Every structure is written in structure tokens, then in C-alpha cells.
Image (cartoon, rainbow, N blue to C red; front, side, top):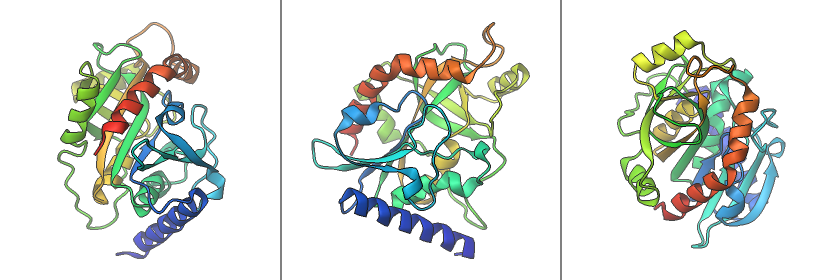
Length: 270
């Protein structure tokens, strides 16, 4: 293990210890990273044990992105399992580097997590997707030109988004369709030409998160479930210009529906 890998591992262990002490639990079983529109899910999922500001946990930072809580929340499901809600996602465009993006996943793993649920708000590249639709991520395109892995760390990404977890999600909501998610670095939205390119190479939805976190999770042996909420048609697929306000408004309108869906799925996870 390189010096940098050791530093990342030590920081994640320190963050995990802080969270476990502040929440009073021995370990977490499931972790969720909540993207735009998904933030209210924690309130209905189980009993909230603790809410910890990101600034109080090593390696995390107060989140300046509207639509993200900036907190790490510990809650207990009705069956007694403990869930870590990561509402302090770091995006690559914030300029803190790829290790900061991966830190939440590394911390979850250090805290005992075996299953990770990644959610996001995304632009609909596939014109068949309607605004407000939830899409199961079946695969991704990492178009950030970086990786959270260092050196000769060759990780197989086949079935990265676990088939068994996607099957559970479809049992809960048979109407869920699957698609390929593309992560770009942002923070600007894509051009219409870039969206045509994404369509050509097989993307169905596009956003600025998730793929790097999923790669990190696979490298640590976690099972991953990914869910995209389509907040708007991608550039060139509608007459109106794109805006972050549109993304937030779509998320607000769907909060209760997304919360109900995610709660049902998480309660069924192994």
C-alpha cells in the first residue's frame, strides 16, 4: 500500500470512529449518499439516532451545494440495522480532488458498511425518460478522466451495480427502468453537441457524481445500488435553458415520492 493509500485509509478510519462515537452505535450496515431530490428520505426511513455536521467529521467539509444537507445522519431501521446517510457528498468540481470525493465511501466501509446506495439527480439523455422518472443504474461511463484508485490497483467493474440489488428494487417498483449513467466533471452543464455524443456512446442519463464513488465502493468490496432521478431533459432536448434552480425545483416536487420509494427499497436490502 502506498503512502497516499495509507493516509486515505487512516483518515477514513478516523472519520468512522468519530461517527460511531457521536452516534453511539458499534457499526453501520448500510450507507446512502443522497443526491438532489433525495434529501428527505432519511426522515421516513427509520429512527434518527444522531445528526452530525460534516465539519465535525475528519475529512468532510460543509457542503455549499443547494439540495445537499451538509450532515451525516445515523438512523436505525425497524429491524435494528443501522444506516449512515451521507448528506455531505463532495463533488469533483469543488476542486478538493478525487480522494475527497471518495472519502465518504471509504468512511462508510471503515464503519462496517457492506451495502452502499448511491442516488443522484440527473439530466435525461435518453429522450424516452420523462422528468420525474427514477432510473436504476445498470452501468456507468466515467468521463471525468480521473480514478479514485492509485497505482496497480486493477479492479473488475463487471456487475458494479449489483444485479441482486437491482432485482430487489424492481420487486419494490416493477416500473423502474434501467440505464447507463455518465459522470462528467462539471460544474457547467453539457452542450447539446456533448449530449449527442453521450447518446452515441450509450448514455441514458448524465450528472456530476456517483461513478467515482461506485468505483471506490467496488474496490473495497461493497455491493452497490445506484438510482438516478431525472430532473430535466439534457441540453438540446428542450427549448428552455438549463439551470440548477430547475433541478432543485424538480427535486422538491418529488421529495415525498422519492422518499417512499427509497424507504421501501432500503427496508428490503439484505
